[in-house]
Image (cartoon, rainbow, N blue to C red; front, side, top):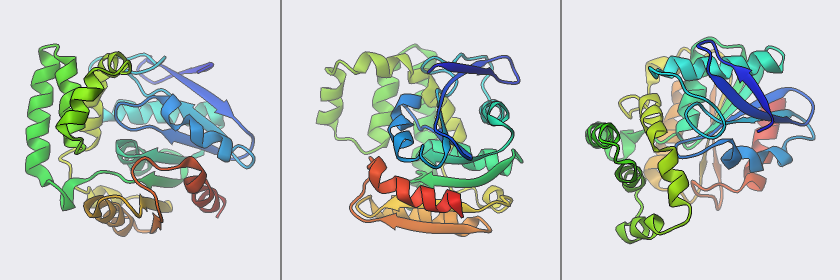
Length: 259
């Protein structure tokens, strides 16, 4: 990241801006930084000014206690202000839930596109989310960052042997470093269910996209987001999973953001 803006509570937010045209802010999901969504930018920069940023508590951005989802919304607001006063948002996974909340909060947002917001209405439901929340809170309070990462990976459905393998990966240290931010994404997801009333207050167009090869519950959750938004549209990308190929996603986003 080569630029920085200051959020309302004084937290520095690091970002990189590339391209020219209407601004699009990319919002990463859990266990991610701006570098995770940055590969999407080259596919959009010929038509848009693209901002990839490190959410608070990770990467090169700062953090200020106590955490609240509203502070992350203010972070997006600071980025929009630095970019000239309005923007479209794209968020993936729990970052999509944050982007939707930012739009519902009244920020100057033109459009919102999300990819596979993992609301659990059609999966494990609120009980699984509540158990995860309790275990995650305990692990982080006790400083067991590795256990917190394991809890998250298990929540995503990763097999136990793959979790064990991940612990031996050279990437594990980086995952532990941002493990406290798992609590932030958990807060963004609320009770884990589609926030239909909140989505119903969004007045700008919403595009909800899912991968055609993703689990059915994730596709249904994404479709529910589109249905809850007054001007929502659902799209499925053939051959894609939660690890979406930027070259497959970008044309869909470009078409939507140009409309």
